[in-house]
Length: 198
Image 1 (cartoon, rainbow, N blue to C red):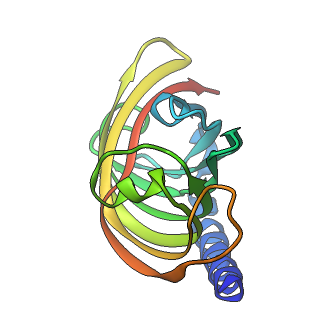
Image 2: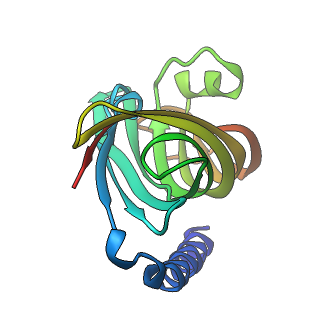
């Protein structure tokens, strides 16, 4: 199963690299860069960071991710990493006002012993799941200017994720119960970010 993940990961990174190389000449002299932290993602105890690059008058590219390596106690595991680049179109000027985004996502997870009483996530309470995912989605957001260098942003996005998983009976158990795939459709992105413009 992990062989398929590494092949998919290499393909996504090659696609992203090619995409970046096509767009970099469009930056010109008006290039701006923003560093940002998603406070919503951080509230889940997951450190995260992103950089956003101006590609032209109405386009930017954000490259961000995060993760955690936490085991809160013997029965609770919350380990994952996520990479989520997003191409954005701005209605007026970049780093100000309304924007629409197209994002990709990939990552790995090892989660168990966490009580999330919503839908399929209920299974995390009594089982451990590990695996990988990849997909894409669309988002809408808005950015407010606070000062010359500081902005705040909120956004919400939805889309698709193909999830490959292995299921274990508890957070520390090593005996696999099942494995499979799941096609997820729903929220794939939510941000409330603090931004510093360079």
